[in-house]
Length: 356
Image (tube, rainbow, N blue to C red; front, top):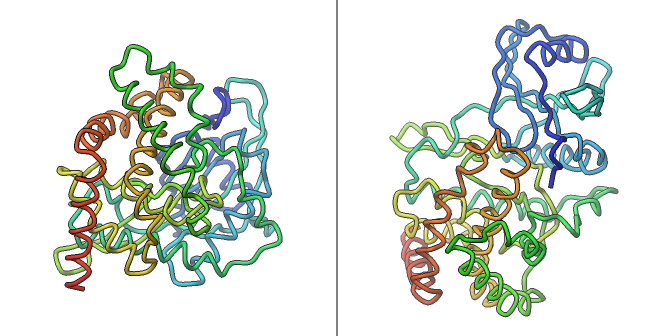
């Protein structure tokens, strides 16, 4: 998790200067894009290209091997026909540059990359039809399946054992529970963490391992019109949370975030699960843990958002987007209980897969 003083704060003119110096591109249009702890700019250059300039927080910039791995993964997925961004080389042929700038906390080093621009709008902007949710689940599973074939000498950097956003590491959040003091939700979160320890951890040896994107959320999936009044997926972005995990974690994360913008969150699990299982059918242990894993992801998101707000109160509005809706959804799912929620998800997935 990034530290308080690590989020970059480059001006538009500083970003334009980097584009000119490193990529020989002259900025025609530049605008900031939202980000959790990095800084992103959408750029249109006089030379005719559209691209995304990403400036990494100073904490993550200290791990160039991990960045190299993420860059390689995007390229590998792109080569295998998936809509991932790729990194554009600088005029000297480098895929990254290191900028030392004072963003108000003294001189710090920030790693900079330039990405290809993917067309489309975020999936949060369009209606989440069952078909689109099916496609999202299918895309997530396809990505994890393709990554099975990837080989790279530095692949072990994806282990990220203490990575706080990994669903393996839910128990690492217990020291942060005090941030919910006085909140009635605290008892629910404690109960979910207990369920995680007693019902998920003992079954983990039966989960299938894989490399997870780790953050398939409603801002990281891009869509464009498909010509039939619907939408198709045009991009998967932001591989900053990528790590070695388990297939079932990827599915749980995808369901969690697809619920957030949906007017009826309970309707999300079935189609997303059906799409996932059209590529990677679940085994019994994975099925049994899905409900608690979804709840655990909501809890991770709620607790870490509270923590981030204490570090970056100026960014509260963006940080709490997921959190506010998540509180309502967690309470509903917890009240309904495992049996009821699973019945809805698995029955609607089965019906959808019959029709496919």
